[in-house]
Length: 101
Image (tube, rainbow, N blue to C red):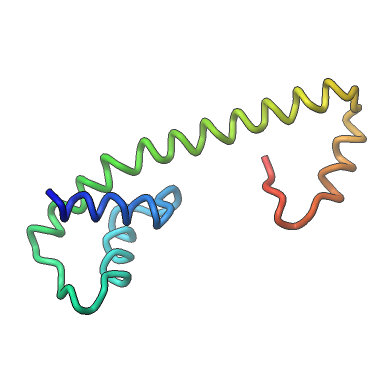
């Protein structure tokens, strides 16, 4: 069970939103400390379902956060009485690190 918990923590750290189960397994293999040895076939078997159980809630939470951020952004723009041209100007002059909705 502790191995599965470690894999779940790795799943969250890897940012699983954009990768498939095979890519996730490959990333776990690459990031696994050399001193721990290779993953056994049983560990690999447990890793794939663990990815499936963990990835969906993480994706859903990420999508929900993005939806709420878009809604909040719209409400703030509305509260300030911004017209679409002003909103476009805000986004065109936003810093490069600013997330796009």
